[in-house]
Image 1 (cartoon, one colour):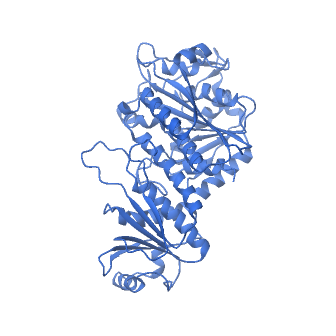
Image 2 (cartoon, rainbow, N blue to C red):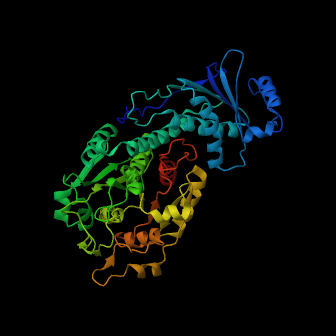
Image 3 (cartoon, rainbow, N blue to C red):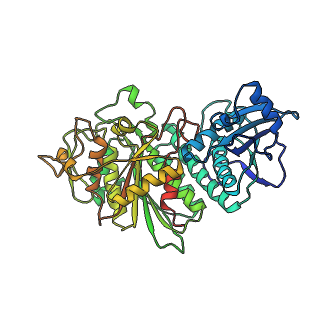
Length: 484
């Protein structure tokens, strides 16, 4: 059992007969005529005629109606010439018509050719799982999560198990991100991680503030020292597979609350800053998903867990601190704390010489200015990695836009007093400058991708996910690291 509250997904049953659940989703490929095997086709024809809709309109707008036995049925067509993101949105619209009634059980029926049924089933079941689970809500009446799914038309249990693992990773990520800051302090976060590590048989190691000071990890310590409680730490979780030939490092920014420090955020921008740990939750969701899928890779997950508080001990503008690798940093703005905690964490991760390192962080406002919150940005030190990252984003529906990180950008980080400035005060291409800064702390020429999670929150949901907190990056990451 996954230890996160309400993270249990609906139980899936594969049926060899048309299910008679009270809530049903019927899916077919796009066509100008209704497939002969589409259940309740005559009822659908009458509904479309009454609404003056053509059959092909179902590929954009799902239709619902009650049938003779009182069941609520939703019909949807999928245009398989569209990309994954568009198909996810179409299925989310269709399933939401059922989920709005808070059913305990939903039946999904897929029709068409074998490959069409496979794609429709895997996408629809995933959408049902991630939207049927409840995120933490501090209300007396929370509703009930979806308890049961019945699937007819596809029966590859292994493929469905892999989709379920991805859904559990997504729900874990969103659940942690949604927790209020008084329920996910660094100390409480570390307790949860210890329990999860025990449950999933991961090796657990943590570097607390005492250890980090001894190691001279001054970039991380500079941020964490503003908290009255010294509960910050870099946590290292290790998954090993006996048949693995590659080792991948996942690094996540885990700022449990970000006040901005001495450069205090105004209320508008401090709201929801308990979600500034989303990068760590994404890395953790990928680790969980890969573990449940029994992916034949070795994974090291490094989580930089701290808070950015204001206080007598907090770091301040014009401080000069020394990072773990000896680089001196001139502090320009205390709200650029994410790159500080990541700097020492990337050094630790890259010193183990992984075959690939990926870090995830809600790092810069400039990335959201650049692409909005429907894409996230990716930067990297290998062109081939960037190409693969963007292609994987299109395949998974978690879309990425690649940005440059050419060396000449770094002139803006030149300091008169230290090896490098932490950032600038001008803003501009801060997402690129952050990458140039972080590059100073990647050792051994490690192949590396940096994902700036501007899509971690989207007001209307995103792709498969209907909540504002999207869990963006978990599905992408699982496919990016896949050794299969």
